[in-house]
Image 1 (cartoon, helix red, strand yellow):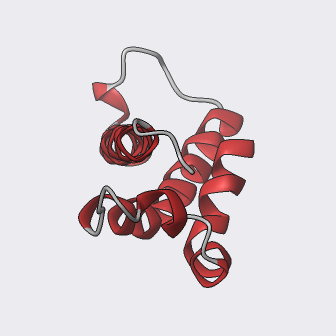
Image 2 (image 1 turned 180 degrees about the vertical axis):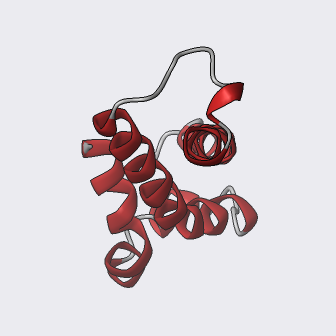
Length: 104
């Protein structure tokens, strides 16, 4: 039997992840845009290729993780949320990007 707080903890984790991923997508996209097309807006002279690659990878993984986070937040139900992220179909199609992203 799951703990009473576990569904709410899962919802809070997914909501926080969704918000931070959206912020990261916007901020890193703007930095990549400035580095490529408006370098005068940057405080530094230029960004290294490894930083640009890291930001681009972060954007891609954040975009891949968005469907899972949206699913977990928008279709959240207190009685079902503990088991919905353990569904094999859900894990196979949407959740795998999240765990790859966290591992990065």
